Image 1 (cartoon, one colour):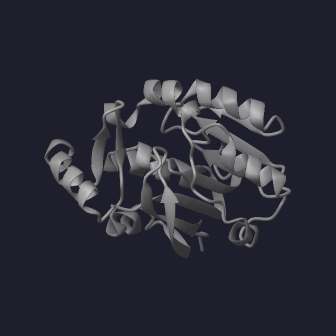
Image 2 (cartoon, rainbow, N blue to C red):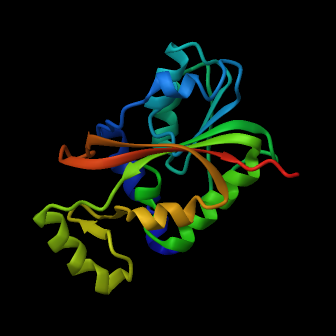
Length: 217
């Protein structure tokens, strides 16, 4: 992964102070994963998503995050889940050992194509055949402020949608064709367009994608 894919110092320092607001569609998720499913939340942050799943009756829960401060916060919020610090993009789980993987605003924290590909490849490794991948992330924004910013940083990073924040982090919003390419090794189940608030409180257009790892014939 490139240096700007690995921004642990920022997330360790700033992450626990942010408010992450992507909604969890428990109704849709409960139709795709049973209460007994082994669920891994990659980039789990301070445990918000796993806490909601636990409150909804899920018990076989694990979370990983590269930021030790995030993991410490998650352990205090969801003591019955299992948490580990990860070394991106490696996931500390055996092949085919989990039923579902969640990536909630994780791709936006990995700006490069190669970094995102490496993580999705690792996710595919730990998923069982037929296992579920669930992405919740941000589209490229169409408002004038974001278009000006994306045009400015495209020359520096070579990817449209990658940008810097003044607080010291590089992030990415996503074009639809890239998400289609990135997830091409999975069988799509659903794609929902949603409106969210970013971690800094801005309105943004986002998506929630669901797909299954193919079963070998």
